[in-house]
Image (cartoon, rainbow, N blue to C red; front, side):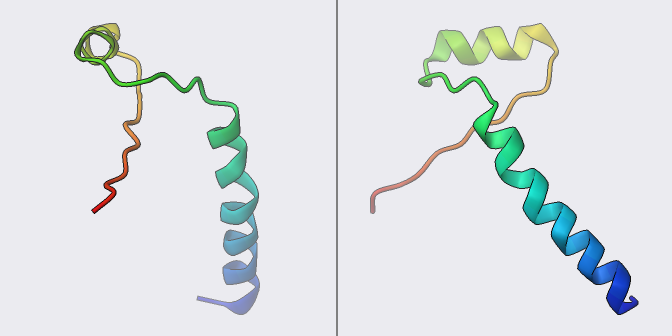
Length: 52
């Protein structure tokens, strides 16, 4: 990969990642909300952490 392409892709990745995360609708997880998201057919993302 050429250096110019690498820099362009890196800049694009860094510039767009926080934008979609900040504009997302964050909802607490519940089984009902998960089922509703599955039934909607729209794309969604689960984000979770473990304290251990």
